[in-house]
Amino acid sequence: MAEVVAPMVGKVIQLLVGEGDEVEENQEVVMLEAMKMEMPVVAETGGKVTSIKVAEGQSVEADDVLVIIG
Amino acid sequence: MSDFITRLESVFSQTGFMNLVWEQPVMWVVGLAFVYLGIKKNVEPLLLVPIGFTAVLVNLPLAPLMTDELGQVVDLVTGQHSDPGLLWYFYHYGFEKGEIVPCLIFLGLGAMTDFGPLLSNPKTLLLGAAAQVGVYTAMFGALLIGFTPQEAAAIGIIGGADGPTTIYTSMQLAPHLLGATALAAYSYMALVPIVQPPVIRALTTAEERGRVMKQTRKVAKSERIVFPIAVAIVVILLVPPAAPLIGLLMLGNLFRECGVVERLNDAAQNSLMNIVTIFLGLGVGATMDGTKFLQPKVIGIYLLGLFAFVFSTGGGVVFAKFFNLFLKNKINPVIGAAGVSAVPMAARVAHSIGQQANKRNYLLMHAMGPNVAGVIGTIIAAGLFIAMLK
Image 1 (cartoon, each protein chain N blue to C red):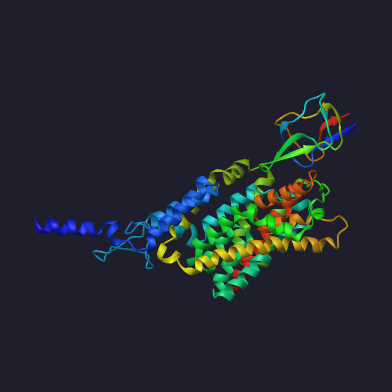
Image 2 (image 1 turned 120 degrees about the horizontal axis):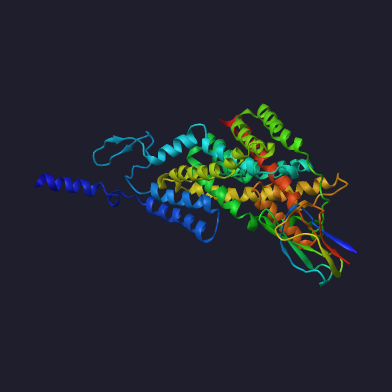
C-alpha cells in the first residue's frame, strides 16, 4: 500500500483518477495549484486506487495524504 | 475683421500640429508599443498600459500636462507661463516628494509576500544576496560605457528585478533616467521566463537540476511576526537611506502576519495597491518626454539591464553550487536563480526547470526563499548606493 502525499502546500484543483482506477508508476493522479502554477502530483508506484482522501477545491499542506494506492 | 483673422491665426498656431517636434511622434510609437505589449502579449499590463498611454499623452504639444524645467508650461505663442499641469502633480507628489508611490507599492508587496520559505531555510538569504551580483557588474559596465556613477547605480539596480526599488533609486540618483530604467526593469521582469532558463541550463547538470530538496520545517507564527520587525530595525540601522523602502515593505508584511488587522491587510494588498499602481503609471509615463527619453543612452540602459539579469541569474546559481560544497543537505542550484527577485515569476521558472529534469521535483516553495530574500538584498544594495553617491 502506498500513500501519494502533497509535495508542498497548495490547493487541489483537479482529481485525475477515481477510486478503483488502475494507475501506473509516474502517472499523474492529482493536480495541485500554488502561486498560480499548476503542478501535477504523480504516483510513486503502480496499483489500484483504493481511496481518495481529498476533494477538489481543498487546500492541503506538505505531506498531507492525497490518494492511497493498494 | 482683421482682428478676427489674427485671432484665428493665433488659435491655429496653438494647435498641437503646428508645434510638433520629431521626437514626439516617435514617442507615440514607443508608448503604443508598450500598450500593445501589455494588451496583446500580456507583458505586465497593469504597468505598461498606463505608462505607455501616458507617454503618448505627454508627447502631444502644448497640452497642459507636464512642465518645462522651470516648473511651468510656456505658451509658445504668447510666451506666457501657466501653472504646472495635471500629470506634473502626480509626478511631483508621487515621486519627487518623498517617493510616496514606490514606497506604498512596497507596503502592498510586503502584505502580499510570504517570508515563510525564507524563515524555514535561512541559508537562502545568502542566495538572495548572491543574486545581486548582476547589480554590481551592470553598474561597472555602465561606468565603463560612460555613465556617471549616479546613473550607473540606478541602471545597476535594474538587475535586482524590483520595480519600486528601481524607481526609488532612479529618483534619488538619476531622475532624468526614470522612464528608461523603470521600463527596462518591468520589461525584463516579464522576460524572466525567457532570459533565465538558458543561463540556468548552461551552468548546471541535469542531475543537479533534478535534485529533490527535503521539505522544510514549519514556521511558527511568532517567527513570522518578529521577522519584519527585526529586519526593519537591523537594515535601517545598517543602511539608513533604505528606510522608506524596507520600512514600508516590513510594515505591510506585519499587517499580513499579525492576523489582527485584516482590513488594513486587505486594503494594502488590493485597493491601495491598485490605486497606487495607477498613480505609478501616470507618474512614470509623465516623464517620458521624447526630447529627454530618445537618446542613445537609453539603448545602453536596455542592454545593461539584460546584462544585469543574466549575471544575477548566473551569480545565484554559481553561488548555490559553491555553497553546496559545505552542505550535507545539498541545495538544488536552480533555486539560486530565483534570487533574482521578480516575485514569484523567478520562483516559478526555477520550479519548471526542476520539474523538467525530474517529475518528482517541487522546487516552488524552496525557490520562494531566495526570491523574497532578493527583494531585501536589492533594497540594501540601493540603500548603499544612495548613501555613497547622493
